Amino acid sequence: MKFLDGILCLLCLGGTLTAYFLLAPPASWAVIGLCAGFAAWTILAPDHSGKIVLRLGDLSWTMEDFVRGWLITGRTGSGKTQSAINAITFQIFQSVKNWGGICLDQKGLYWEILVKMAAHFGRNDDLILLQTRPLGKDMLWRPPHTINLTGNPHVPASTYAKVIVDTAVSLTGGRGGNPFFPTKAQLAIQTAFEILRHIEAFVTIPNIHRMLLNKEDAQYVIEELTNRGDQRSRELLAAFRSYLEQPPEQFGGVQGTLSTYLEFFLDPEIAEVFCAEEPTFSVSEIDHGKIVCIAMPQKFQSERLYINTILKLSYYFHALSRFDKSAQEREKDNLIVLFADEGQEIITGAESAFADHRAAGVIREARATIVLATQAYTSIHGALDKRYADVLMLNLSNELIFTVANQDSAVIASKNIGEREIVEKSWGWSGGKKSYNYQKKIKPFFESYQLRKLSKFTAIIRHCEKPFRKRLIPPINPDGTFPQWFLSSRPDYALRQWFKAKPSPLNHERISH
Image (cartoon, rainbow, N blue to C red; front, side):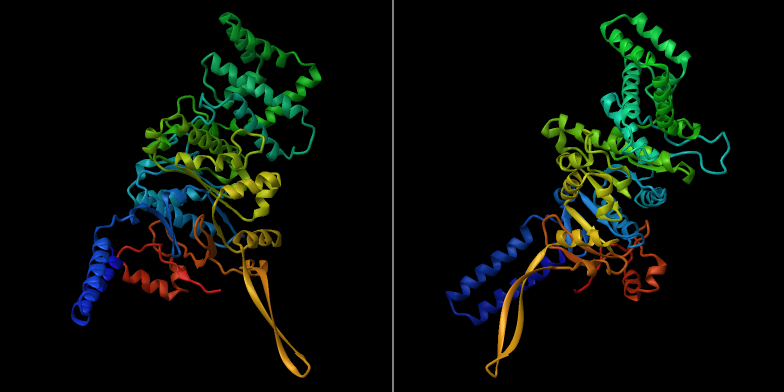
């Protein structure tokens, strides 16, 4: 029984005694019966609080609400990571014991938080750290886990090829340029994927690079397909010869484009972790509570963007593949979450079958969701056409709005929060008498300038089903305690933490507006 249930029982008992001594029958019997029935209901009613997986402010989320997607916006330094992402991750660790997922960020620091948080909850073995060789380690160092980013045979070759090319185009500044060579390169990569799968070779990006750009490897592929002699081999051989027999100048341009697009995976430090021929981990293991994060030096910023994008694609494909199971099997599936800090960097083009705006509205039915953090709404508009960006933001039904970065985003945020009807009162003089005028007007709850002045760690919390709240969401450490630098400026939180044997980030201060 919860504390409030106990209070209600005591009040019902008091009402029963009061009715017995102060009221005459039959009124006393009616009141006694009513109070006794209500007390029995508070004691015997099923407790649904265990279904709550997250609390922020005085709002709570059930599993059904939580998987409807999350959008976290706010300028740099407003508290998106320290308070919002940390609080959500910590509470999911608390509430959902077997959750799995993929955690991505562009700063390269999220893995440090996850390692400590997983250790705090005793889930060290569930954390899959995809780590390249740390600075200072010698050549004898070996990665703790490896993966083949392009090793899922169920993902269409065309999808992998498009993701590789789209990401490369965005990195190399090729958007809006001549699409001829990127298109030819995409077709060549798709053909290479199909050939490697058909001849049962290791489907890795370095192998694709060698096959398309090395004469000896190309000749080996031709001989292998010729020796097989089946219909599919003949089709793939024709497609490969078509690639090789392009006019010399055109062929040189295509090969140059391919070299530029694929070179990000050729560094031995990257290839041994993310293009492993015999990987130790596959994305499907998140169904068993595995949590993936990435650790690599800052020199691999471009490679990180590639890897994050392909891992995100793999997550979407895996989440959608859950629909191939029966309803009874899906009921047993665990919660899987994609955390994407600075998520605008890895948003997939609208043409993709696994585009973010398509996946976000569907995967919740598979007990999967997205937590996307970005600096501003305009960051998403910069990555996607406005039509698709709006669809993506609509499908992320829960929202945390921290200090808004720019005026355009503030206007969007103000509209998203909603409007209210107010009555404005004005007065004047007419014929020597004072008169009053009342007029109904529709105004936003928050003007755009107010959203740009929100204090650090203060957010507008938009629940997918409940009214919004304006709250302070305090930053937390990986063990759930408040940072010392925060406590030094907030003695009320220091006192609160001192009183608690096991500090929790679930207490948030109400802020009036």
